[in-house]
Length: 156
Image 1 (spheres, rainbow, N blue to C red):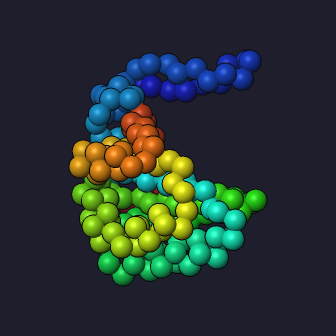
Image 2: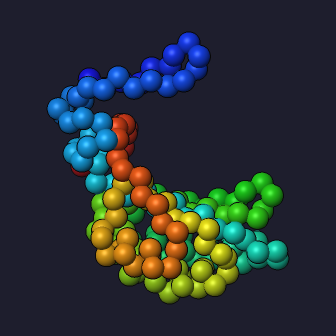
């Protein structure tokens, strides 16, 4: 079984092995039903005087998602302490849910990108190729692959 341990000097050390599912960490496969999830993290620069507009846009986006996207597990918006950076976080059960979000919230997304500068987009888990291709044309997009973990959320 794969495990992570802390050495005396504080560095993390991974003991390579297989999980209960027989899959090696970092490989595509199902770990506790979470490997298909897509966590979207958008990181934005809020221009001077743009904080109120960011809050308004975040609230509008949250309402659209709440009303029109029943599969979204979580959506949250955050602002740095110095109020110059905003972050949006969405958790989708699978790439199809994220694709649906991109279509359903298209107008809000376009309006939001007029208010802030998108610094980068990070995906934890693999979005669809179409979403990745589309976003990568305009933004700095980074994808981080599933390695291992668990959730106490009932994914069924």
